[in-house]
Image (cartoon, rainbow, N blue to C red):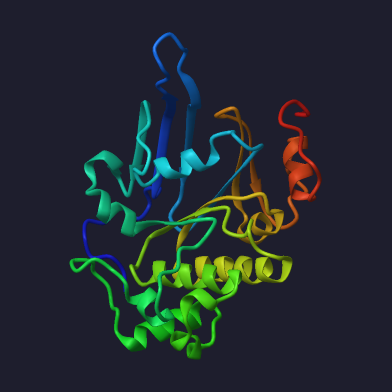
Length: 263
C-alpha cells in the first residue's frame, strides 16, 4: 500500500536540497555557530544517500532538516516536489520517517508498541499487518507477545523499523541505526535495512560510521566536515572507484582524518 495523497512526477527526485545552511544564534556579542554551510544534493526515488564525516560535522542536523525537525537558516529542502515548509509536519514525518540511534520502546507488549499511532494517522494496524511487519524486519511473529522492554538492542531497533513501516513511508531517515549494537545485531539490522530498501522501494538517507551499511546500500556518499560537503562519491560494490582518500579509508574500515587527505 502506498500513500494516496499528491504524488509528483515519478521521474523527479524525491529530495532536492539546494544551498542549505544553518547557523545557531548565540548569546549577544558572540558569532553565530555555523552547523551547515551551503549543502546541496538530490536523492532519487528508491535510491540511497549516506552521510559520513567526523563527529560534529552536522550530519544528524542535516538529516533532521529533511523532515522539518530542524529549520535551516537559508536554502530549500523539497520533498516529493514541494518545499518541506509547505507540508503539514505530521504528514511529512509519516512519509519521511526518522529512525533514531537508540530506539524508543514503551511499556507494554510489542503489539502495543507497533500499534501506537495518532487517531488520524493513515495505515493498516490490524493484527495481521502487525505480524507481517515483524516478519518483514526478520523477527519471529511470536515476538508480538513479548514485553517490549525485555528485547535485545537489535530486536528493539528492528521493532522500531517495523513500527515505521506501518505508517507506509516513502523515505527512511536513519541516524546511526547500528552504533549502539554489537557486531551480530549490527549485521542483522544492516541486512534488514538493505532488504527493505529493495523490497519496498524505499528511499534511504542514513548517517553512519558503519562501512558495511554503505556497502550494502550503495548509492551516493557525502563526506561532511564542519558543515560543508568536502567529498562526494557513488558507491557500487566495494567502492574501488572512489577517488577521495578519506572516503576510501572509511569504506575500508580505517580511521578517517577530519580534514585533508583528498586527492
